[in-house]
Image: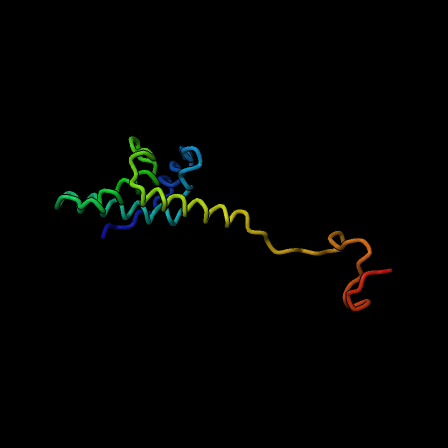
Length: 125
């Protein structure tokens, strides 16, 4: 296991040069960035010891793509990892589009509606 790197300058550089590749590449959170970076370092270290399996090679390509390493393209990814990217993007969009808590102050009340405490929640007539 590699020593985790938590140098913020690497993450800031990642954000500065982030390219979403026509909305196919999700932007990684700081924690996810360092997880992927650590896993990639482990895979590279493993490759120096023995030849990668097809699965490890695909995983390495996927991590390189997520981390925006030069020379890695969407076309180089296996269909399984393209599906994983699509799942990640859908999850991020769902989180972004999830409605927040509804705040109802004085300005938020609809006209003609009384407080439930005032008349049992009935419309004014």
